[in-house]
Image (cartoon, rainbow, N blue to C red; front, top):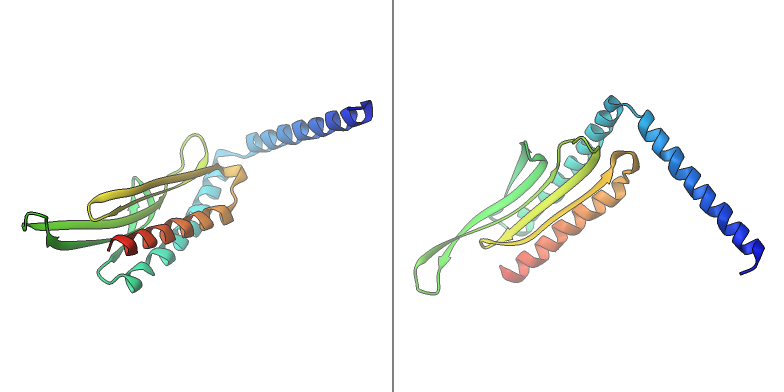
Length: 161
């Protein structure tokens, strides 16, 4: 590699370092109140998206019930259903299926976190979480993940139901 190419790479590294430092300075400048406001704004938008996605599952799988989740675990929604069947020994068996997606409360590390748990017929099938620093949040990424998790659950439920 000739000197000019190495010089260009060194300059690019310097720009990246400068950008990272500028971003850290901006984060430090962001007050605790601003971070809380951002988290609340994102939480509201994502909670509505979770609700709209989960409310569609009972339309395709009768028996599921939707409920809004507002608890210490976070804000979001859940769908669940109880089924009765026969076990392999001919005994009555109860089966529980659910999918819950919540936006976790703000923490001291200032991240936006979305978590999902799903179970089909008493067996947990997945537990997912995704987080990003509040200063770097891309809501599109979160909405795509929520969509993907609901679609994955629907596909798995259809296969096992």
